[in-house]
Image (cartoon, rainbow, N blue to C red):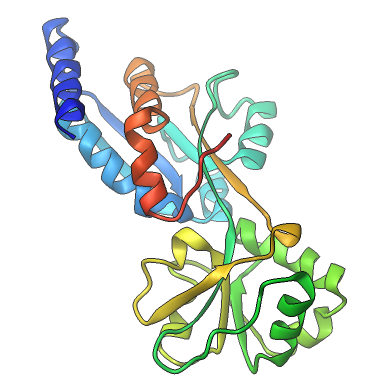
Length: 253
C-alpha cells in the first residue's frame, strides 16, 4: 500500500510539473462495476488532482443517455456493448481496455433461508423450479437478465420461472430478497455482495455461467482525452486488481 501511495504521489507531481492542471472527467459506468470503480476513481482523484464525476446505471440506461446526446469522456461498459459502440464510432477506435469480469450468482435471505443446491446444472434447474419467487434484472435493461432468459429457455423452464418472477429495473436487484419479499435472487455477484440482508449462495455452475467483461473506453468528444487515458490506465493497472477481487470480480484474462 505504501508503494502504491508513493506511485500515486509521483503521478500527481508529474502532472502538475508539466502544467497539466486539473481536468474534469465525466464517466458513464455500468452499475455492476460500481463497488470497485467508485473507490478506484476516488483514489485516482486523490493521486492526480483531477475531478471525476461518475454516473452509474444499466447498459440500457447508458445507451439511452448517449442516444439523447449526453456527453461523457469515458464509458465503462460490457465488452459486447463496447464492440457495438466502436462500430458506431461512439468510442475512439482502439481505446477500449478490459478492466475486470464478473459472473452471475444466486442470493437468498441471510436469516431465513437455507442454502439451496446449485452445484450442478440439474441441481440449479431444480432449485429454480422449487423456488416460490425469483427476481432478476429486466432483460431489456441489464446484461445478466438478457442472458438469463436464454438460460431459462435452454433449461426448459421459461414458463415456470416467468410465472413467479419479478423483473428489477435498476439499483440492487436482489434487495427484495434481503427484505424477505422474494425467495431467490439471480444477479451479478458484484451486485449481490453489498446488499444488506442477503447471502451469496455461490456462482452459477461453470457450465451455465456467463462472465461479463467490463471495458473502459474514451469517447471522441472527450475534452481531456489524455487524462481519460490516464484514468483507464489506472483502472486497468496492477493496483486495481486487489480492489476488484475484494468486490467479487475476477481477472479479465
